[in-house]
Length: 264
Ligand SMILES: N[C@@H](CCC(=O)N[C@@H](CS)C(=O)NCC(=O)O)C(=O)O
Image (tube, rainbow, N blue to C red; front, side, top):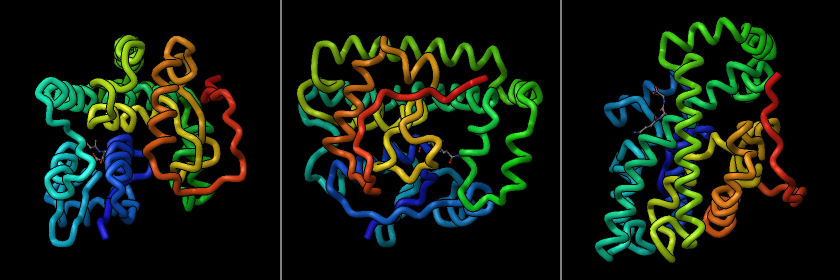
């Protein structure tokens, strides 16, 4: 069986999970422990980031490489369409989404973490000892802000990322106002990439991901809960319902409005 080395909360891993589900391929998720677990990833793939796909003896790192590998090896339900215009658009949009939504959403999410102590503790792995959680949630926000500035996620960079994300979402809503999918009438690599990479803007319901309870359905304030982007998140919900495999059965089926990650 295919094996996906991943972080459950990684937007690039979510992109690949979408691709695998769309193709109807069975796979086993291997949750990598940040830091120590990445040594194994490095030994296996020559680099330390997830996602990495292992298919027998074949190891493929990087979500774009994985998408191309899947289409070559499992051509049923193609991700990249054959008609020239749709092909070009889907490849271009996939590349854009990696560099735009994928990176800016991570910055915006870090901004929310900086401002929200409970959220910081919520994203730690479930087996994190309580005393570590309480230390992490107790780091003052202004200290995180100062540390963040040194690595390009300080206040100004975060504001710029949020503003630019809004422009991306405006553009995507304009496209989705005209057609059901990003490149036309059928879903392609572009749709699954954008949908997966927007994971951190609004978390899906728990049935699709093994999420901490506190994160399921939660939205980044001003973005994931903004009515201006309803067309985008409705489109994404449709993709989840139609193509993403539900892994966790939940008793609650209520499709309530998203609640924001509260920021004090
Ligand atoms: N270009 C890569 C990006 C992957 C990526 O940024 N992975 C993050 C998780 S979302 C990661 O592994 N971070 C850990 C690290 O960089 O050490 C892809 O498309 O797969």
